[in-house]
Image (cartoon, rainbow, N blue to C red; front, side, top):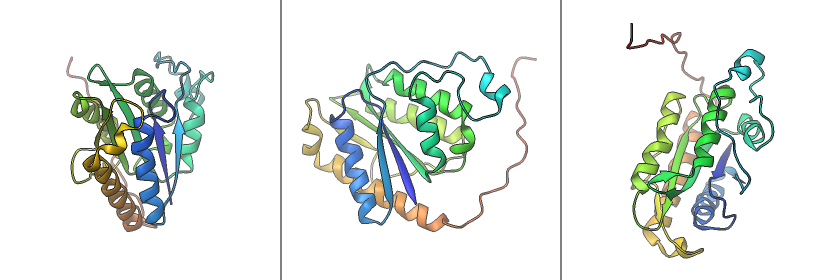
Length: 204
């Protein structure tokens, strides 16, 4: 079993990284492998709705000049996902939102049905909005959303301060325990068979 953790912060060793590292260490204690991947400081383009990924049917975004396809490939071989983001103006980092939207649309088969969790890291406010925003795409992909003892929020402004948020770090460890528990519970279990999608528009 392996969990992929996406660090949606441009700061390689910042507070989002510390929160994800706490999860990674707790997963290891539960016997679950994990990998933290960094989105980095390079631009991540948004989806332009060109539809080429669907036309090509290769589970890859046609734009291959950033980390989107690389992370999708990692998810193909992973059993669960955790996405962490700092809070920018009460919203997730725009780059990580662009990444999620493109990955889920172009390579959704790699994400479907796999447990997922979101983590928000902030100085003061806006964390619940970020947490909710990050969780919404998971539900569109039939991904069981893994909970903790509280919303998955860690506080800290300066680099390294997150480690001082004792409750936040405990929440990360509890999240890891719940993730490991769910992964072990569903191991070797067949995934549900779904009805064909029946999309509708409200405008007739």
